[in-house]
Image (cartoon, rainbow, N blue to C red; front, side, top):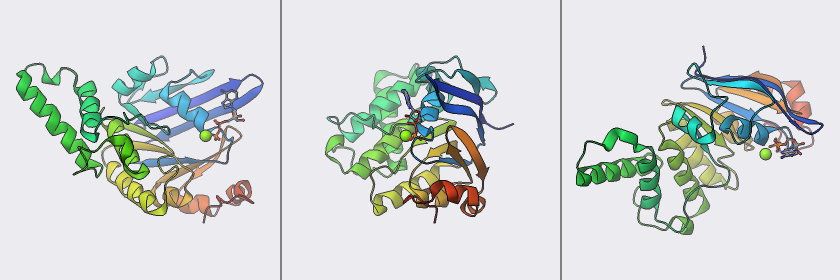
Length: 250
Ligand code: ADP
Ligand code: MG
């Protein structure tokens, strides 16, 4: 059984079926990428998975637990974390304060038996380690909002990691990035996959083909096909979908 599964998701907006019986799985240690042209229903699917709104039909299961009735916050606590396309960082706060807030929010009862001073030490150590993990070492005292876009996106990933997710939902992590930042983000995501299952929604085909163990192609709300990078690249149906667009898988 897969670590993470969505099963038969349906979402209608009035007469429009934006999500049409979508099922997919992600295993531990796997990156499953979801691609598709504009309007295919990628954002709707992300919103269904994170729990922003409920599906009209279907279930979402993590580690054998049915998350369908859970709120967004409850899903995060259950091990499903989302990295937002619109960044969730506090722009006027330092990198360190952003990290501290995130770590503290998920520390739960683990610090309960420590003295105040020791628990503050433990939080700082955890925040520093989290920053280091995503490549923010040395930038802790900078005001987050003044940092380059690519660096802010790394912080965004760090905030999503603070909850120690079993499944990480990455919604266009390379959006608005140049090639250098994009390459760094690819490297960062690659280091994460040993610790979690990753569902990657991304426009940047180069990144997708570098990272994904499996790729599913969404078209008109349906999964057109799923396969390895090589299988998807050579699939005539997929090429037809992307024909005439700049996103043609290379
Ligand atoms: P993608 O992210 O792949 O570009 P979306 O999930 O944003 O696709 O949209 C899928 C379809 O659902 C589109 O036709 C879009 O116009 C429609 N849609 C998305 N959100 C809403 C909404 N809140 N109300 C009505 N229609 C919507
Ligand atoms: Mg979208």
